[in-house]
Length: 216
Image (tube, rainbow, N blue to C red; front, side):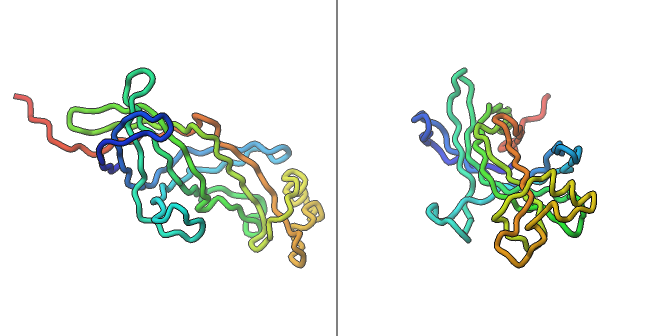
């Protein structure tokens, strides 16, 4: 991970003096996750991809915002006296290998899915100037997976077991409005997921800033 140290800063949450750090956004591959659905068994996501987003040029912008800023963070002293790095990162999540029943008819929304992680963890400094930053999430983001037809309007939510279970047995009536493209009640199957606190573990290391002399 590429970083820039910007100098003295103040942590807004604690008021502690610290050192400001800017992170260059990067792409991360994560481990696979398994979702267990009643009546449908295990649904495996496969490797997932997290993309860190540049920050907004205008913090007050809400839609179609220009983004070119680096991700701000801060190094402060933790309760145990060790240095701690904190940051809030906006990310997108992709699960390109996640498959849903009736592939081709149904699709999911885990493509560039936006969410925010509040991260904190200890730092280890090496003699060549590298920083190893361990990060775990302190917030609990919701990930609402929708399984729907390509142009469904997700205003109604129908039960995941009765709908997809019905589709697998040929009972399309179980999905009700999912296939009724003529009304605004067209719905989607919603699978509510959540990342628990401390459920994300990231381990970054920055580039060295100096060369260590060869041992004589």
